[in-house]
Image (cartoon, rainbow, N blue to C red):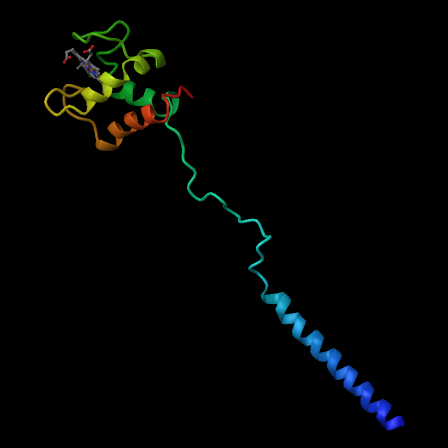
Length: 128
Ligand code: HEC
């Protein structure tokens, strides 16, 4: 009877050891936990084009030497404020992309610069 108890006890010990031995590596490899928040849920946030951040600089660098306030060198319109540029945006987009009659008159600005003005309109002509 005592032998049976010892064998039973040994069996339980082996069983217990095996269980704890199995669970330990399972915890270590469980790194793909779906409850973990992703460190970067939106890797490509879209930034909207605004007058203050993007468009004002294009105007002062390429346009306001003539489209100043008041305009000079025969330019018909001042393009120095948000409201002026906003109200003129369709004519501006047409003229900066014109191959026969571009603005500035010296030639088309780079494609990136011109498409930024189009994106400004598509984003809703934001000031800031
Ligand atoms: C060297 C001076 C000069 C520069 C620089 C210049 N313009 Fe002009 N712009 C003019 C003149 C002169 C006219 C009028 C003659 C014409 O329409 O071609 C004009 C006309 C325009 C018109 C048409 C206005 C209307 O009522 O028909 C727009 C729009 C315009 N410019 C936008 C721009 C933009 C945007 C820039 C900068 C990317 C720019 N211009 C740079 C001289 C300039």
